[in-house]
Length: 397
Image (cartoon, rainbow, N blue to C red):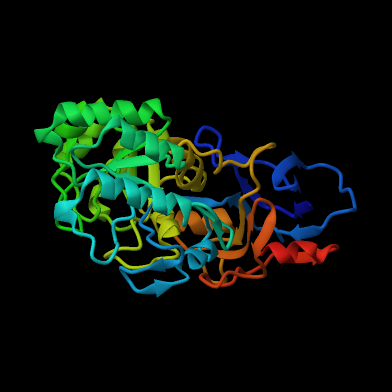
């Protein structure tokens, strides 16, 4: 399948070191980006005129809580993953399948948490949901797990583990051993931070714990929903090097403190984003974009840097080969533009002001999954225009 996007006014790479690409066209072949600004071939299955709008990588939500496919029992909501696609998200990473009706957080066993992760990876994580890849099967670590449990997780394709119900300060050596077992199997380690979670069963986790644990990603350091103390946030920026996640469900004041400190020290490559939904804050299809706009409109980050945090940064921290626009990369792309009435003449001006853009199209592996306009955003002032020579790809939607 060959697809061409042309008429690009702005393009964002997803790479924090060089966030803007000065290109006008992208050619896509069999789901991968083939070239920039190539001469038109005339034999495309689909052509999309971005109408002077922006092209950016599909957003990567590093913190979701799926349970069973597109149903989340926390909010009794159906079709939430497809709605997030219309908010620009093409990749999700589970932070644990913990919102299961009847799950007793006070009596989790090694066999139970391992089995939940294996089932989730083998179901929700096995297929794409309306095009969205959900990396499900994140195991919630508990005392008593053995190396054999990690072997089972690895065999099922589980890529992430998380500390949330684990008494970290009481069992340091056991926690460190689990980090070692996870890393030996190519798994990334995330840890719940801050105050007690919605479950009520987690424990406080701040700098003093994270300093010796050394996870790959510290989850929602500015609140999920309760943040760690200000001095702990400062110490994380100053004295550690692992990824620091902020979520739309957190404390905006703490997020501002964290982001400004990262900006002042030139450490924005460490900043990753998630929504921490569905959960107590609900189903928020535009949640990741809302966090991105907070970075631009309130924190003063450039649009390109903020987009990189929501795409390439988050993907890299989780070991995923998405979130970047470059030849050879997966063509997970969002086409968007300023909404009529928003600030400034173009997409970047609107984002810098914190205005939500209008999404025209979302492509997953080169296949347009959202056409004409998103169901979750206002229409852009100048929508992308679509023409098709071969309609066979419609069967993949």
